[in-house]
Length: 384
Image 1 (spheres, rainbow, N blue to C red):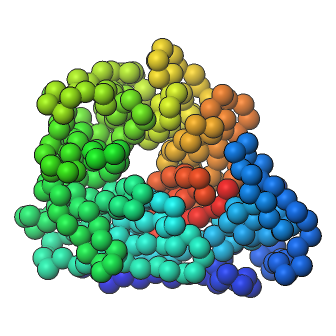
Image 2 (image 1 turned 180 degrees about the vertical axis):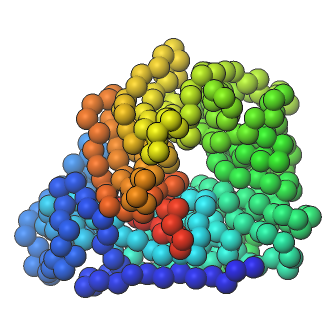
Image 3 (image 1 turned 90 degrees about the vertical axis):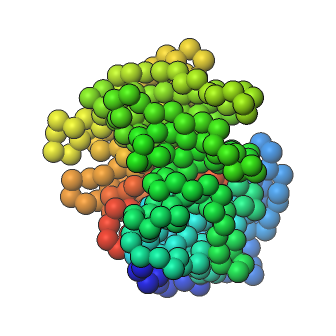
């Protein structure tokens, strides 16, 4: 098993993390002074409708109150009310999850924990396996105070599966054994994951540790990605024409979910994301050296298709929060962008650029997080 290697790049910042990339409305000056918070400039109120928190801060420059009160930049700089991303260099990374205080990365070394507070609390929270072969923590999901992850193992028997993670002391408990689980999502007491070996989508009840769903394809086409909203479980199959399918979450535990094809011709789709009103698909046109593509929206009720962004170069990772759709790109020269567009459409906005090609991306109330393809990999964190 590989030894853990985590490197943080430092700049002249009291919170000791590098500010990388360019941010819309921000600055490329990494030596910009951080304001003296002992002498705040103004009394400010957050801009969200339900945010009634007040603070004594300059919302244009304070990295702990950037743009609104209590909006942290995770150790990065705040310029004109916008955070710049910070980066952590790690040996490798695949899965990505977050909760109120931490971001979690699945890797060959274990599940790593990165504190949002900017204290450089970077720790493996899993124990090493006493087994040979290839072991990789691929999927990570955090719900409240619980963290779950998948182990993709070849060939050690009895190691692969869905695990519950205990951070203190570091360790894991096997909930459901299977050799090749990949992407993982958790809703309430159910874990949903891709079963790579069987080209299937599967769900397991966490409490009873019993499988509640297994849907395979007669053509054994692989599953590329999965997504959840409050009523459906979605998955994307890889074939000559990709198929977007879903199953209802509202059923008895004893009743198998019946899958429903949303669209059988989402050509060259790579990733999906869902919110309460729609499911979104990142589409890559494979006919050019750097695939052009689109960000597409399918209405949850009518299944009507809308192209939100067309002729978008190399979209890859995808996430949605009900207001925006976010994605990473995979540039031909190894550099990429992180972008977003309103779920209603309009002009896309670049959040970060001149970065290594992006992979997985997730969002939560505090920030936007993504991994890169580069070796060593990087975890980026961008306060919002």
